[in-house]
Length: 409
Image (cartoon, rainbow, N blue to C red; front, side, top):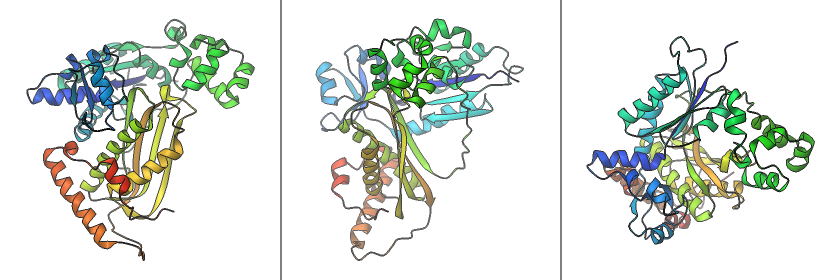
């Protein structure tokens, strides 16, 4: 049986890097070299930091904190708005490049993927050299950097790519686990959330190695049977999760984003959810589709087993309305999140799509209001197509105050 070889490839500070690439093409400064962040307008109350440069990190600026707080720490901070349309295009170019090398590529978020190189040794006899070639090609042709992790399974490949950044290749094979992984804090292990790490720490389990060697009966008492068995396996480097090839023709629209640091406040989370909704609904409308199902995905820090959930809802009527999608996404999000656990990923997906404009009759339906809303969104979409997706957006206040034209099941 062939020994598996998995690459995990992760864009370094994706939003900041992609914005920098675009700015450089316009003759502007490279945000990666100066104190800079990606976020909304500083004078907007709900604006938060979505990404930061390494120079900004030196001012103790954190992802997810209010923009006003970041500017107090660094008054000369350069603030650039997000451009999710450009990010989507950059992600597409990135993933397509990786597909040139590997027979199976699984995209897990806008800025990271797994690639299965099992059985390709006759083409790529030196995996490390191949990983370095990919890094260099991404940097040369696309203008941003990536980290590549190599291992015999997805878990260890992801752990490896999270080692020293940026623009690095790391390995984490079975014979390297004791040296490279076991000394790390237990909270650094994938699938160990903050609450689990605190529980383990308070019971003398401080490193991943401690967890790997802990008595399973003790772990079951502390974490419950299912999580105890899973985490002990992971701490030992064991995982058989396959790299999945998602067919491009699958019908639906989705967008998600990961953060370098946990999102911990509802205001920050809603701001991100709103930006994602603006993007995904615009893309769907651009293609002429409507969705009957709205869904939300969240994942806690370090990809915790406890909070890695999706929640979806079927609408009575297919919709392409940003207002309706955000209203339902926000309600689903509130049902998913306890507003205490830090979030590392937020996503939204629209499925069961159709081009039909079937609408249930309602005694309370305001057809003039619907027509006015549709014309407004059509006008905004025209502006987005000309000046970029983030040139105009529906604000949270406008959306939250608007009555939905959909009745929920």
